[in-house]
Length: 116
Image (cartoon, rainbow, N blue to C red; front, side, top):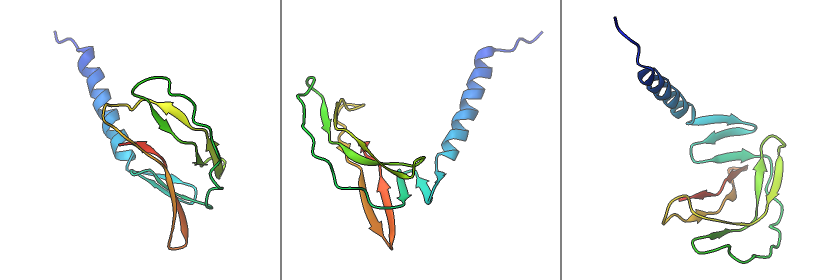
């Protein structure tokens, strides 16, 4: 009599789910355009002017200051301010690449900040 190994069944599900997610992550449809793997969104308008912030004392060694910035709120179809904060890089040696906005061919694009 053959017994089913629950670990094999679990790993099969994990592999299939992972493959599905990997394939679906290539492009996601967003209002006004596609969101690519690089995290670039086509947005409705440029962001407002950057707000002044006070940089508070670091909570400790290894933290990086990530300045406040306007981020595109896709569900609200508008810009929302995200205050500056201290964060530790996910992995040693990584640096923060700030989000940025640009206009190309008459269309507006925003790319979220990310660790690199």
